[in-house]
Length: 445
Ligand code: PHE
Ligand code: NA
Image 1 (cartoon, rainbow, N blue to C red):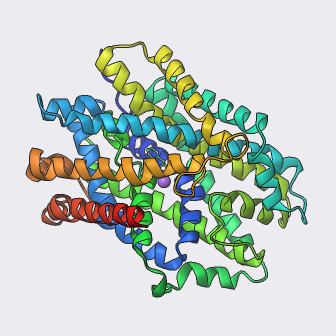
Image 2 (tube, helix red, strand yellow):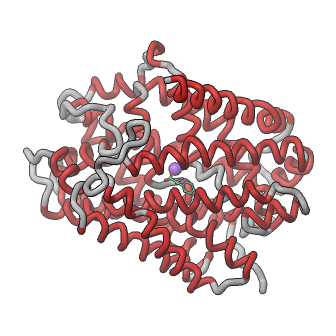
């Protein structure tokens, strides 16, 4: 069977951006920044994106295009009869774990989409509304189910038709809407303190945790360390440039994250909320902003619809990793496999839902179930996957081969010695040291 290809350069950039831009930008970035002192986090995060994110992104796309395989098949092809395929296997596992709770959070987005139409009156206690929703049972499970169903139906339809079409139209609208939101947020009384929190770094807030969270967020937001970009790269035509495409993806993704911060932090301070509130931050703050806007119901609906769609285009890349693996390696039928895997992931996502109700006694290092899934994925699986990918390119396959493949047809960016240095030493050592210190700190309390 002829392998599908993205139908144009734009098609690939849009699809890869669709994978990158998602809850990671609008939900996870602000709350992680908020718990890490704001501006200082932003600074270290940007460094992580540039020095670790970009080279790993280029590396994954390169492995994908070179081999035209799913992550497991890709490592098998480049390193036959070695255990390197396990790195791909780790990615498939990460796809499973991430999607299971990603869908739960996306389900909150779907809930807020409808809630915006009726329930965002000024004076509502939005923290209470949020907690009320997540600590329910039927409603969050229902929306988690709906979201998984949407994901599965897109994946079942195939790569080009399913993924490419959705992304093309909606990402620009998301961008415009964020700008509108920023405008409202910045003009709220007391917004200035939020700007200061977000832009003026307090260096006394730096800790190991800041670095750890910044690197994890860099991986999560760029869809790295689990083979999503290997898989998407495997559908990239030979005529396109990897380094250029990676630059666009990184630019769009970082742009949306920074804009989300500008929409959220001024409002957090204007409403007297706590920037370190954690996973509820976006879902508590933005409805409050909408309640203060003319046509708030309309804008709220539109925004959460777009958030859900951004989440959908990321979710399909997570599921695609698992499905591409099963379809390529075992020749299972695509559609049926999508539905079965989707249902299993739905089930794996039930504990995170119930972590706010039936399983609220659960605690791991002080975290609830959803945070625990997030921790396993973002502090263990993604950085490990990213580190091993860097070591694979740097010390097994060879950066010279990677550079040649990555630069083919490049018009804007070319990689070379700096890339090689980052991939061989900087990225793997930074990740290793920070992970080791964190584990040491956790174990010794
Ligand atoms: N990058 C996505 C986001 O920011 C999440 C994601 C992680 C998608 C890993 C695919 C793989 O929301
Ligand atoms: Na992202």
